[in-house]
Amino acid sequence: MEWEYLVEKAIKAKENAYVPYSEFRVGAAVLTDSGKVFVGCNVENASYGAAICAERTAVVKAVSEGDTKIKAIAITSDSQDYTFPCGICRQVIAEFCDEETQVICSNKNGKYVRYYVKDILPHAFTKKDLL
Ligand code: THU
Image 1: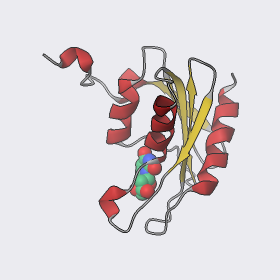
Image 2 (image 1 turned 180 degrees about the vertical axis):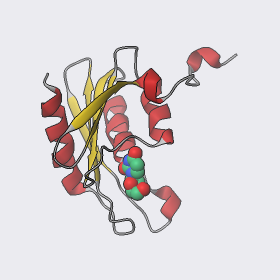
Image 3 (image 1 turned 135 degrees about the vertical axis):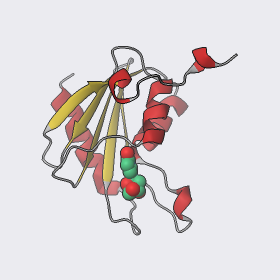
Image 4 (image 1 turned 90 degrees about the vertical axis):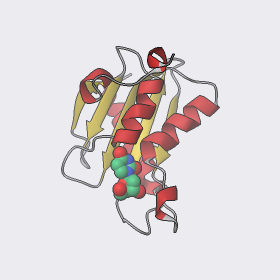
C-alpha cells in the first residue's frame, strides 16, 4: 500500500466533514491489518462537546467492523500545514496500534510527514498500565 493512496482517501473523506461551527474540515483514512481502508471525517454538533474528530470516526468504523489492528492512519485538512491528530485521537490510535503503526500527517495538497505512534504519544497509557 502506497502512503499516497491512503492520503488521497483521507482527502476524499474530508468532503463529508460536517463542520457548521468550526468550518475546519478534517479527513482520515485507516489501513488495518486485513488490508481494508476505513475513512472518516469530523462531525460537529450544536452541543459543541459532542463533536467527533475525523480520526476517531475512522478508527471506530474499523473497530466496529471487527478490524482492531491499525497499520497506518492518514490525516488531512484544508491547511497548508501538516495536520496532526489531537491528544484524544492519539490516545485512541494508541489503543489499536503496534510499534510499526504509521501516523501520516498530510497538508491539503497531500504532502505528508510520517511518525510512529510512540513518537507523537510518548509514555502512552495503555492496557499494560492497568492493575
Ligand atoms: N479535529 C479533527 O477532526 N481532528 C483533529 O485531530 C483535530 C481537530 C476537528 C474537531 C473539530 O470539528 C474541528 O477539527 C476544529 O477543532
